[in-house]
Length: 168
Image (cartoon, rainbow, N blue to C red):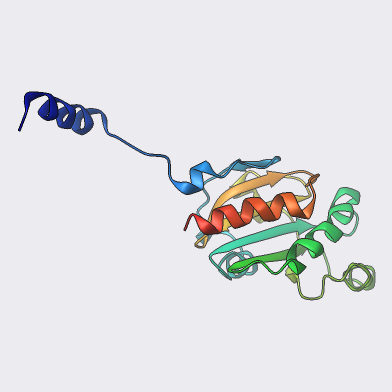
């Protein structure tokens, strides 16, 4: 083996060599930020929603939250775009009331809404203290969290989620 090739192997061994993965090449869409969350600390309704497919998006919303209600139609459109191996779910924060049921019916969330959480206290382990909030899990592990309104179109989020799926 030539000395030059040997030097290259030594450099790679000492300093590492990492090619960016396909997932790292998927441009992050605002307001999502990278996150690492111990899913076992989350309520069961969240754990189940995050495990539904290789890529899972779960949105936390409340009937009293204006930005939450504003983004719900976009989430319905995103879910209806029929992405392979990608699920979109919502979880309402607060009691199940007739007003909540009416919003779910009016917006078309019947298939998306997977449950209710009584309050936000269990979300503090992820650094979520307000609504709306959205998580994206890759193979059941929360990798991205967005705090605040999802202001892009469904097509923008779909492109990002499909990129994440293709990187698996």
